[in-house]
Length: 425
Image (cartoon, rainbow, N blue to C red; front, top):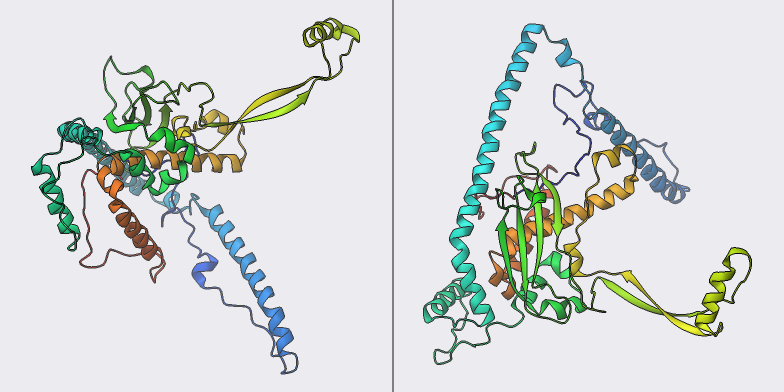
């Protein structure tokens, strides 16, 4: 779907254009020359060279800060060009806005139809997902035809692949720890899964995708909103009683300025942990000595009752305290975007907003990766094949950023480019 995830309620900023950017060139555009220094003699050349580096670096840093600040001030400000146009020309400008409205309406319709197309093909793929799940769980034996098709794909990927013996039957136990392995082979999720989490995730038997339903049977909090749901199905385990844990991602009803659905918020399942098994908390036991009783003023009665109950004021007791800890299962308690009112009231410091935005982006990206990558290509994440493509994508991004003009460039001729018209990434 969308890779754009602005925090709801953030102020809109107009992008700079030739019409709303001042005509005077910014210092960077003019080309800043390095400050010159007087000639130095051979005797004090070393001393001057030592002084020159820090002073120039500091000056350049200061000037860069000034330029960046100036550009930030200019962002969204009008140069006065539009305002100076004759009324007759302004009418044409407004007409173009009207044309753009119709374009936007068509694009919104296109995106919504793409979403419906995704739903259609998910339904067509469901029998294949069910077949995959049955093989993983050992409920159904793999067929000879399926094995041969898989080996053909393996040979295509690796010429040195050695075919498996034909006289051995597939294991009736399926594939143990399939989903734990697949999740751990995703870069983002591997950082979230602790060793303690792994013991619980060994009981994960399936991960599925569903699009949100529309109609009277839809949950109240998702009614009328586009989005999707990731479903984690577990077998009975020693950690929680839930058989299913869900994570729902909601989009705003209208397509955003970028031309894609915009993230709104996420909802997670309340995990029913068994006693002392909450993986999102660490328990610390401390010794605490009872304080001596005080019989002064209004506390006399309470103190007396406490004294009679404890009998021994010098007795030491153990106090058990819980504190939050890192865990994959925090995924089901997603961060909550700040409201527009909270932002306007200054309830959040700037650093807090930045930190929250990073958490929201990370949470949203994990959901998108589960939807677009891990669920459709689970076997590739299990074997590690998908990691090769993720590394290639990162290299391509680095090459794009490091291009000579500093702005990146088009893919090289002959590069594998797979345009997917309705892929909302």
